[in-house]
Image 1 (cartoon, helix red, strand yellow):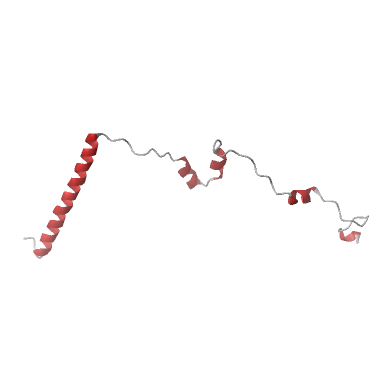
Image 2 (cartoon, one colour):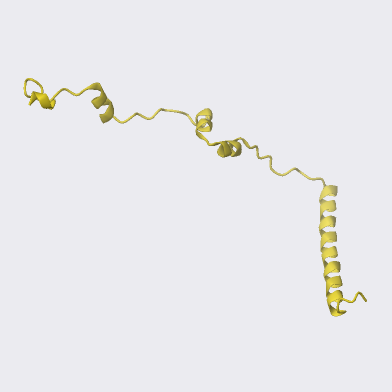
Length: 100
């Protein structure tokens, strides 16, 4: 029986070894403050996630009244030109495309 390695010389089971004790106890979680130490989280991210995590979002820039008026004038101009182009396309289709 002793040749099998399952029992000791006194007939009982062998004492647990250090590797058995380590395997039986699950690893304890490390107490890390992720809010105050972001380096732990940043170390675990993949490269594309790291770029997203480091990106700084600035938000909208405050615009003056004149700049807002200029942008609205540009929007109105673009809509006006869309109408002009649509009218020209319709006229071109009704005239048969002969250029007259």
